[in-house]
Amino acid sequence: MKKLVSLAIVLFFAATVFAEEYVASQKITQQVLSGELAQTVYAGDDIEPVKILYENTGLDENSVPEYSSTNFLENFGLSKRWTMGPVCEIAGEMRSDIAAGTYKAYILVQDDEGKFAKTEFEFTVLEKEKTLSLKWNEGSGNVNQTVTAGTSITPIVFDYEGITRYSVSELPLGLTKTLDSKKQKIMIVGSVNSDVMSGDYEYKVTVWNEKNDEKSVSGTIAVVGGQARTSIKLFSDNTSQEVLAGNEIEPVVFQFANVRLDESLSSFKFEGSLKGSFAYSVEGSKLTCSGTVDENSKGGLYTIRIIAIGENNNDTAFANVEVTRESVETKVTVVQNESQTLSPGDSIKPIVFQVENGSNPELTNFPGDGYGLAKNGGTVTVTGVVGENARGPYEVVLTVTGADNNKASAKATINVVIGSSSSSIASSSSSEASSSSEQTTGIATVAKSGVKFGYANNVLTVAMPNSAMLRVQVFDMMGHLVESFAETEASSKSFNLAHLTKGNYVVRIESARSVRTARILVK
Image (cartoon, rainbow, N blue to C red; front, top):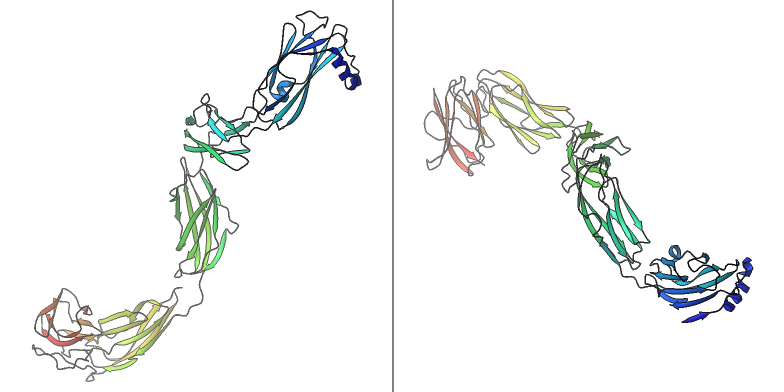
């Protein structure tokens, strides 16, 4: 027990109370029944309870003599109560968030004469080593909840210790996070907006301490009945751009809302007329399209079209791309047999055209029906048989189409004269094989009726004056049948034999009117 007499109070008032025009009581005595007026305590720990008995106040024993005091609860988290005697008790837990330091407090009492006595307290607060912790408060709403859009959740509370910062991520719109630093609680409260998407929202509460250590707790808010409206619009300034075929486009950015995302971007459809190799990526609410335009694209205006697929609606956005092409000249030239003289029914010498930057070759003005076109890389080879009734010079024209639909052509001349033949081999009406060498590349019949045929570059072309049944058989030099073709109602037909093993073969061509044989060389 410690007893403090009024003399101590008088001395104190000499420096303080009197300066505030308080008159010191000469009769009040105070006695510390328990505890210490000066204590050292860790923040967050309980103080040693202090009980002080005030006597000789001249007041009724049931009266509280207090005139004023420090706000113990607000400043320190401590309680203050008076009991009969009168006795004042200060107790409780020192606030955990109070900074380390020395703090003063007081109680000022008054006697029946209006004079005062003051009791002073001194708390030396030490900083307690804080252990980082985060725990769900089991008395609050469950960490996992299902809620209808437009309604409230049961508040979710987490207790923490020793944190310097925190975050709560991925909550559905409408829910908010709050922090009560005095009670050391993080709370998730509120109503989910009615216009959110339905689905599971996996949120995460994370806390850190001053050492950047981390703890977290996760949960799921399952929302049903969302009325979200899906939208997508062009975000880039480049609503239209010009790009050379084969080059990269300037990335096009779209902004979207209320679209469910996954790794495959399955809630988007990528359409439009622009062809090429394109990639799509998402960051936040932005969708970016980048890539290269197909080098074979024709010049013109194309679109990039994105459809966003939502829970309640779909939306579409566009961007325009003007594709241009470098000026490329389409050329065709004759490189072999630009001019030749033949007799009716003869097989022509293969006419070879060199083609640059062109495709879809078309041949016109050939003197007969039996011709073929063989394209190989940048060359086009024409083979065929001159018509029986052809006479005079013919300008055979090969036309090709460029990438921009521009056309180019070249001419070769076939002069058809009776009695003139450039064929190197003639067929017979028997099974006797031609005596041409292995370097022979063309054969023809000069019969005035029946089957006419030619052979060049491994292609056998057969023509008949009238449509009828046609059968072609190919034998090796040992007499074994290696290939057979049958056609009906065909006035002209080409057979490519390049798939056969290189070497000499005998062909047998049979129609309703005649049979022809000849030896050929597959190269």
